[in-house]
Length: 349
Image (cartoon, rainbow, N blue to C red):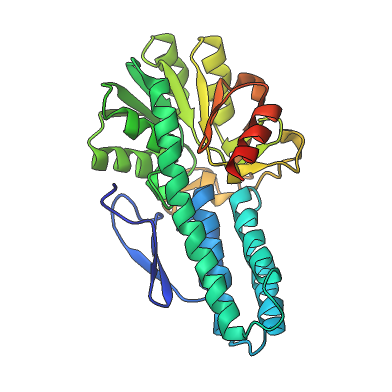
């Protein structure tokens, strides 16, 4: 259990922990409509693929209920508009689109005699079910992944894939913290430029959990592996193609390349909802481009000459051939990932 809640349903609103202010300040946002939710997702107040999915599902309900539709048909039309709007907040995290589609499908399945009030109640129930489902998935991922870290003396992770990125205990960090209950190792946390999720969020979570850790710059990871300090790398993912290619925060692919060179197993931890079976390979994953200021400024202070242009992709894609295993709620999947992921999906249905 964590000492904080990343996302909560509170009566008629959603309560979000504003991650843009961590670790210096703990502040919760009250979200009452889809525009506020869109902004929270876009500016990374809520982030991490699973948490974004949960937030989006609540956003569909909030935006639809606020307009007070009077018939089932009106609920469906309104929810579609709200879902289409929320889908524009971020392009890469597939859980966002998965959760929106779950909301659409839930409303589409209702019988024609359903009242608007009943339909809204069902929509809220679906959002809460997605929330609870993520908690269960995270717990299962942690259980399945922890044995992979047995006897490790050092584990490296990138960005933040903990409770702050999910509605539960986290994916990659959930695995690490679960393993730390029985194993004694040091966690090496990449700072994760340009937005420092590793420094601001992962180090904060590890401190909260009482797990020994060292913060490193992204460029120090290869040296840590070379010196034998790292026996496993575990990261999350924002979208996984059907063949196992995995998109995660920029800087993940270099880790996978270094891990292969130094013969360190590289693991991805993510729920099956992160797998986009419609994409054959990672070449088809849309990669979000972020603003120049994320690189040219640091907390509002310029660190590059005025007018400097940047190349600022938010994610990179790790080829499946560099991944030792993908840890899902249905167990550990190894190559060939195409077959393994499909089999895992079948078991989950």
